[in-house]
Length: 120
Image (tube, rainbow, N blue to C red; front, side, top):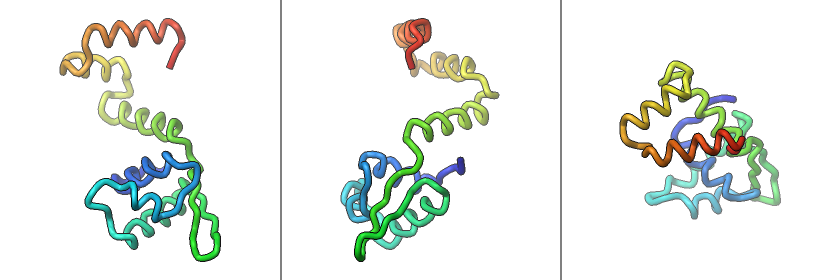
């Protein structure tokens, strides 16, 4: 799975909110200031070329459908993140966030409970 640029990821976050969508629909949901339509259209084409989107022409309009589920992307992204920044150790990542006080002891207990129950 090819890594996305920040702009591509922002677009995919919007696209995943739809079952299928047009560029105009995504443009309407982009945070201000929204990118120009042509820039967004170019980003959609790049995402299509990378295999993230499927395009279907309906008259003069294209409808786009995500080919990769958000959960699949998130899993891949986090795996790369942990590999690159925490020596491929999820334990080291959790320890880092605990030391930085981003996770409270209660949060850690809840995570442990979820793991023991086999929940995600």
